[in-house]
Length: 407
Image 1 (cartoon, one colour):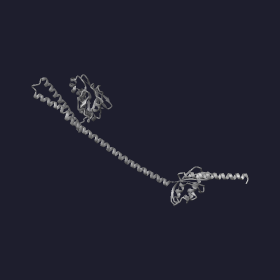
Image 2 (cartoon, helix red, strand yellow):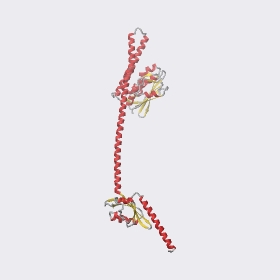
Image 3 (cartoon, one colour):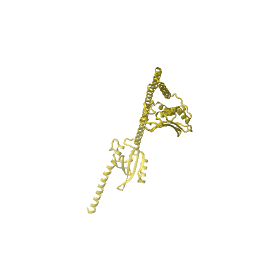
Image 4 (cartoon, one colour):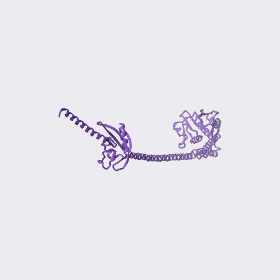
């Protein structure tokens, strides 16, 4: 053997060794592929396949594998169509064809086929998947999603129902608390606040009757004034109680009509002017004469009179109480402003609330039930308006409310 022959033999052996190494690595690689995979020539002879392919077509006997892919095709035209396309293109082509398993059952397969060259020879790569099984999985997944959606809707519906029940319970609890507070307030006023002026009237009148000849004319006059003041307070309190009780039972009439605000304010001032003069307080009607309300005249008069009376009560001698008005959107904003003692933050929190006992407000220690302000709130809200207070301790107060204006 000469040197050239030896060199050729060595080269052939090296090529065969390389081919064996490549084939080993190729077989290992296709086993990692997650779908059924085979490699064939153009006659359909199978040169390599992975375990997924064997399991798809031969579930019971993995060794009994046909040597030709086209034996698994049900229709001959599928084979001819595929070969024709593979001759014409190097690109991957996708087909849906009927294929047959070992047990003779048919299934719709998705086939992806690509032409390639290995050592100058043409080969075909096939990737095959069961479309029917995939569709079943999709249908099962969609059914599961539908069931989950129905379950979620049912859960959300139940949650919404429980939330609504909880809201209703909270509302019922709030109404019950308000009802109890209303009852407590009513009995407190009757048992204490109304009892006090009646006790003064009874005591003073008894002294006048039994000791009339023993007391001086000046003392008699003081007793008469005390009886008169106590009777006024009792009457005013009874009147407020009556209006409040009618509000609570829904038996108070609401009759909106055009109301000239400045004239109404003037009427309230005339009723309270004697008290203002007695305390040397300047009572001012600064209401705009053009402002006309669409309101229940009795209710608005009650609110203005109540707020003005409170302002006089908490304003020291020589002070000022002023009634103002200004338009705000569809409402007239009315305020009763005073130069009185003002309110602390804790005092402001006690106002307009049925569940708080307003026995003493501010440094003047003026007695009050708070019922008048609660009644004002009821009347204002009946008109769709709002009522609030702006005040600082030692700087006076403004009680402000809104009533619809005549359009």
